[in-house]
Length: 68
Image (cartoon, rainbow, N blue to C red; front, side):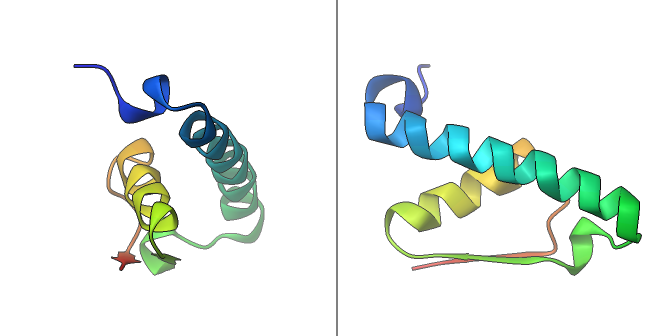
């Protein structure tokens, strides 16, 4: 099954930006010693999909995801 991001350019751009944020997050996590389980990601509309994608791309390690 093809992911939505592969079919809609703006979604692909959002996912690329999200990936960059997650990479920075991984660096800060190791540098400052906090866990993804202590993070709450919040999104609205397309941002809610991005929040869910953040959870998927981090293998469910994010503590809480809220989307509406």
